[in-house]
Length: 188
Image (cartoon, rainbow, N blue to C red):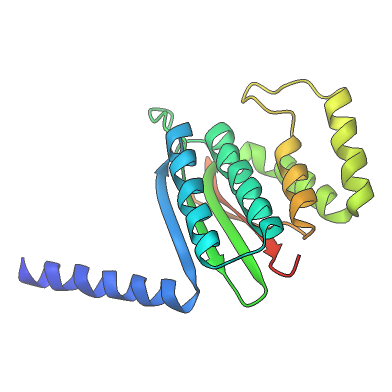
């Protein structure tokens, strides 16, 4: 029992060191609900105010975070058909010249090619192209069964002015883990 306790303490300290080294100010793992979104955004807002970030940067970080949390809430899949929770992980890190909002969630493998195609299209467009795609999606798209018209990722790219960084890690033949990193420049 004492060895387990020591192992956990070592793990906790390593996690703390990693977070400090990477300037990760907030981390959440679990089900993403409206209540969690409110709490997480409130904590981020306090952190940004404490760091005396410009209103423009604060607004961008806040808006992108809400969009990222909503993406998990609406689009995350479960590890198995028995689970209903829309779980994910959200981290906020601050670098010298930017903030990163990193999200991760389970996604069914059958949805990966379509999502990858959308991300590649979004990353290929400039600001005007993103605005045009956003308007086109509003005009032409129907709301999906998960509650979106595919606008969230376009909106994140528009607000950040940066390319969306993403990865898919296949967990088994049914699901993968989708990681999205949104970068907001601090000198905006």
